Structures are given as C-alpha cells and as structure tokens.
Length: 108
Length: 120
Image (cartoon, rainbow over all chains, first blue to last red):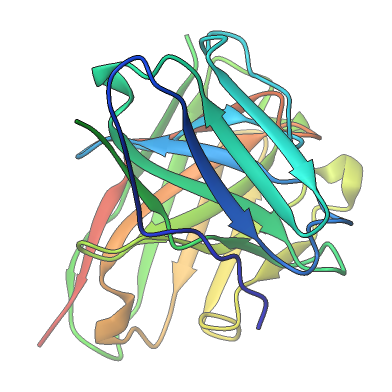
C-alpha cells in the first residue's frame, strides 16, 4: 500500500523557520495537502494543492514541491504553531488517499 | 457559519454494527465530496473513505482496512453523510471525523469527531 513519510518531530525556537518534509513516490503526480492538528481539536487545512493557502491561514505558512518530496515551511514560528502536522495525498491512480504519519512541531 | 456535526458514536462489541451520521450546514452540501477520517487514541490520522458529489457520480472509495465492512452514503436532501460500520473490530476504536471539501479542497470543513470504542 502507498505510504507518505514524515519526520516524527521537528523543533525550532520562536521566530525561526520550521520545515517539515513529506516523501512519497506519487507526489510528482498527485497534489499534497497539509493539516495542522492541536490536542483535542479537529485537523485544520493549512496548505492545499502543494502550495496554495486557504483563506484565514497566516502568510507564514507556505508549501513547495520538488520531485517526490513536498515541504511545509513555517516562517517566523510562533508558540501557537506548536502542533502535529500531517501531509495528505493520493496514490498514483488518484483513487486512494493516505496521510503521512505526522510530525510533532515543538516550539522551544 | 459552516458546521459539521458527527453523531452515533459509542461503545459497541466486536462483530456488531454502528452507523455514524454527519450533519452539515452553512454550505451547499450537494456540491461537496464527503470523507471520513479516523484517529486511534494517541495515533495519527487514517483515511477511511469518501463519497463523491453527485456531479462526479456519487461513487465511493475505501481504505483497504475497511473495504467490505464499511459503507459511506449521503442524503443530499437532508445534508447528511453516513458511515455504516459492520463487523467491527477492536482496532476500529478511534475518533471518527467527517469532512467536506470542494474540488481542489480550497474549501475544506471538518467536524469535531465522534468516539467509537469497540470492546467486549
């Protein structure tokens, strides 16, 4: 079955830049989506179609794609950005969706 | 205001069935695909499946872990999506979220989830 691979954890100090990667063989063909989830809350979409930002999401959140890897970048990290982040995409057929294992972002 | 409210969760014995509902308001339900995502206690998100809008055939897709046991349906007249879960297993224990999204996911809405516990 298709898998997306994320690092389990990323740590940064306030004001620094956090980068979270997600790797998968079908990513050159399929869009990626990024979700932020805080404890006890439902996920919130922060990036769609690799690099688009939904309305209401701060400009410090951005996404990029290169080959089989997509990256979520958070510039000028704030304490409120501490959360779990999940990438989501589909297999090469576009039929089955999958989430990455999630990355816990810690703001030191 | 957009709202998705899941209901129907609870404690159920292995092998039994349960039906979850997702009641939507604040957006044109019939234009949106509806999906179900679950999260086992302390674990990550797992895609369960989705149903396309009628404009895209209203067809469904499922994760391998639930295919043949779970069925997703929708009633556009009531703005409700359903997840029928049969032959439940202990590993199906999770918070179940419904989400609705337009083509391309520029609009993506989630409920707060409902807990399903499968235990004897």
